[in-house]
Image (cartoon, rainbow, N blue to C red):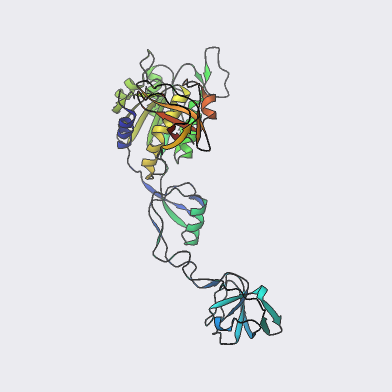
Length: 392
């Protein structure tokens, strides 16, 4: 067995950033930006009025002063000419400030008199002008490569006039469950069978993290069935098997990986849940064998596959970040394996579930954090600061 940290390092070493593709802006949500987004012009590209009102010279912005209105300008239009002393131009929000003007008199502070305005007694001090480039300047890097694009990023990129974007291709992932005891959801299980759940939870996670994943037919507990399933799984960037990675009579994953020339990176990790996990590579495809217990498989996905997908995509945003919170219940001394315990996090406080059996999906469904216990770590008391990572 190797440590969790060593296993994660060896797994990430297998991965390279995959190739790049071009997508339309409207299809770029949740994709990973493959290069820097650099502004090609100032935003706004001109001094603009932030309010409806009148453009004028600041020297004329005096209570009770009367000004001649010499024109009007709206957003998307321009005033042709230069404002002189004693003149004003009617201006609407977003319109370019006319030449010669350096202040905006808001509408509420102006009394309209035919072709004139009279400035009311109260005058606002602010100029109500959005200066050219006040949002961003031409040549500035606004988004760095490796950014997972969210809605506000898309809006910013649209303002930069970037209809096409270079993004990292989504990793192709094939998922194979193994075991005679499994049936797919929608089928009627026999008395000695259960409904497969791992593959569906895993697919949801992988797709959320930016992959394109496919569930393949269940491989039965024999080498031939597993080999056929693996034939269907490639070409893929990542192939995941669930179950069959332990040392039981029907655990064939390691043996079959060897047969198809998967070069092993590691096998068995000193962690709980998830000891029987293995990984390797054949050409450009990474193979990962996850444990069969539902909690073990999905917790290992969070701990190993999430940062692995991030490495393939070229982003650090999928790395698991360790944080500190206040423990809400006592914990006994930990055993020799690193333990990731299901917990519920609220307002920085962590309640660790008393039930940590790796088959209990109902406990995992309620959890939103994993409390981390180091090998042989002493007992912890309520109120202690404890390390955790958040669950998606």
